[in-house]
Image (cartoon, rainbow, N blue to C red; front, side, top):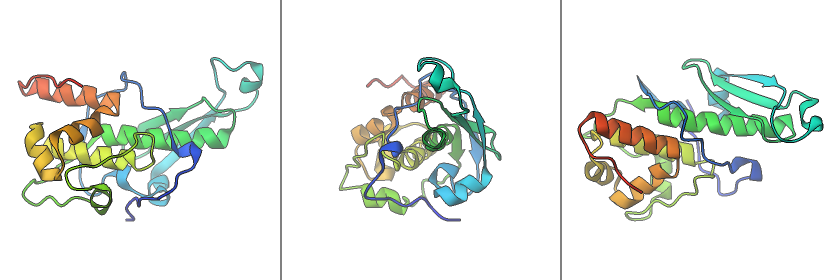
Length: 200
């Protein structure tokens, strides 16, 4: 399977607002490559699209056509939705990006810290103990999935997770807190393990 590759340029439609913090925060364990890390061609083989009429602000012209889009990952039944744009094609792109973010949060790989090797994308973007990424960039779901996988394998000890990822604890937490739903999930998992909640 093809891995998602970094692109130096990104179209405006690839830059999205974060998911709302009320997204479902449970998770399930998976094997193999994380779906959020797959390139579009490979990921979309397992995705179905549902188009419907938009609702809410925008006036009557917004509702005349089926512009809203829901992208559902069939193996996991996880979805991403978009209805803000007037064009169906733009909402389709946004729904895919939101699907990637939701997959990144709700699916966990059961990795071994002793055998863990960072992905090429992670290493390409890392500079020393820093890994700067705009949360609206198309690479963000891939980076988020990897950060959460390592945190999960580290039993949410952020120092161990940061050392494994070869970035600072502050930088690792920043990657996660870019996405409110991911930060909610992180603190819920820490609470279940008797750890204190992290603060931004």
